[in-house]
Length: 117
Image (tube, rainbow, N blue to C red):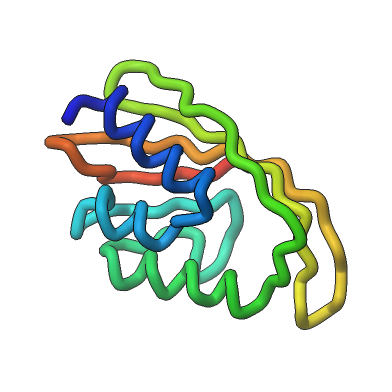
């Protein structure tokens, strides 16, 4: 599967709300995930760490709505834009997130995801 095909399939799964399934299908076991922040989740490595980071996010946020746009492909990378209406449970603060994920593909798997917001 080339980058364009992977990007299309991955993004369709995201649009269908199948985030965990998309990660399980397309993420490399050695994936690196980078966030635009400091702290322990700024960079995590491996599928277990990425899954744990995602679980923390879902445990701490109430998602009111979510849309995914794209993919936008360039070479071995593609981007997906996310617009999310979310409440951070510990504080009750509601936020409109606008985020871009840039994914790098190698040998038919996502080897890096990098988020910009």
